[in-house]
Image 1 (cartoon, rainbow, N blue to C red):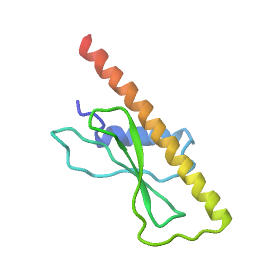
Image 2: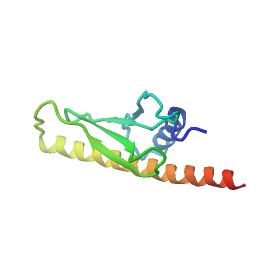
Image 3: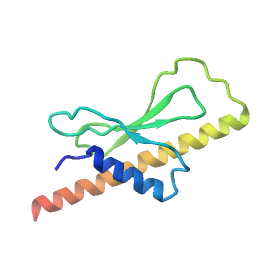
Image 4: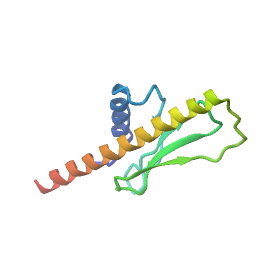
Length: 118
């Protein structure tokens, strides 16, 4: 069973969105070539209040830990105080999603381990 397949990640994103925790963020799973037959998992989280995006990805194939990576900005971003607050909310949603994906990964790995043993 592939770990973090596109279908599985989309299911997790739908679950996160349905919980209301994402604040309406529009994260999506990127199309990627599987690495050694295993999907690696890459979630894009576009930012409305910056000229860059962030992406969420596991630290390694098969590892439950996730990280948020900020892409290099193509240009300077100047924001009003209210836009900075909006950006902070977006980054908070990205952090919440990253933590959610990590929890789901830990639970998924435990389920796979239980099925392997039993």
